[in-house]
Structures are given as C-alpha cells and as structure tokens.
Length: 220
Image (tube, rainbow, N blue to C red; front, side, top):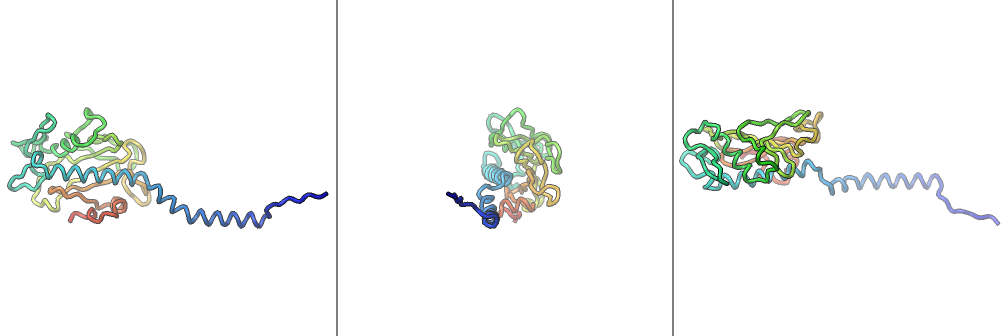
C-alpha cells in the first residue's frame, strides 16, 4: 500500500516567505516605536532634571534673592546651603561667584561622588568622538554634566545664555554631538540657560527629541 505525505511545494514556501517579509516590513517600525532610543530617553531625562533644577534655583529667594538690577542667576550674592557657602557678596568676578550656579545645582541632584564634583574648573565635553573628558560631576544615573562656570552677568539677560552639556552615557562611546554623517546617534547634547532662568535648545537632534514640547524650541 502506498502512503502519501502532505508537504509544501516550493511555490508555497516562497509565497509564505514573501508574506512574512511583508509583515516584518510593516511591523518593524511599530516595534521600534515600542522601544525608544536609549539616548533619546536619557536626554529627555537630563533636560527635565535641568529644567526643574534651574526653576527651583532661580525662583528660590534663599538661593537667588531679589535684588535691584539683577534678573536671576546673575545675583552672585553668597548664600549658605547644606553647610556650604556658594557665591560671593563682595566680588562679582571671583571664582566663588562664577561657581555659584554649578555648586548649587550639584548639591540638589543625586551626584554619584560628591568628592569628585568640580565647579571651579570649566569642563568641556568631547564632541567629536574619542575618550570622554572629565565632567563637572556625574549623577547616579550615569549622566555626565558639564555646567557653566559663569556669573551670568550681562546687559542682555533675555538673550544672553550659557550652555549646560550632558553626556547621557558618561564614559561610553560614541562621545559626540549630532552630525548627520559622522554622529547620527549622539550621546552629547546642549541645553541653553538664560540669566532669567529660561532654558531651551537649538540643536537639531535636541529639538527632535523634545519635539512634543514646543516651549523648549527657542529662547523666546
């Protein structure tokens, strides 16, 4: 007696593969959206930390007390916090005056090593690849922060700004800012801070990652 076995023909196999390929092409963007880019997630986190910290500092009379002729972060009057002094009541050009913003910011976030905080030296991130540079401090989530060492003193407080740079994965590569050809997926981002406490972004990738919030697109 002959036995017959059911089997797929080559044509049926090919049709099945084509159907699977079409389904994969349709579903891949959906799956990608379900798992957002880690750099984007970390930058958004860094941005909202910066937004909250700057808001709290500039609106707190204990940190930046109201003073005639001052608009916010340019008030470098010395204040005490957590048993430390920040700012300089006598010399607006001193190192203590320039480090006030960075020092207070570092005290209010979760820093991984307080002994390694350096708000006296201007630190710049690595923007074009290579080894990561030393930051002002690193928070417990691994974000390296490069804060401005500045008094924020200027005659144009609503247009003048300083930059906070964040390397969202610390020492890990690629250690670069956005460039369409050489760094399409950056880990270093720039957040701009005005004297009056307004923060915003102007970089293409920063805008893309924060496009759901139109208020951060410019310094106006």
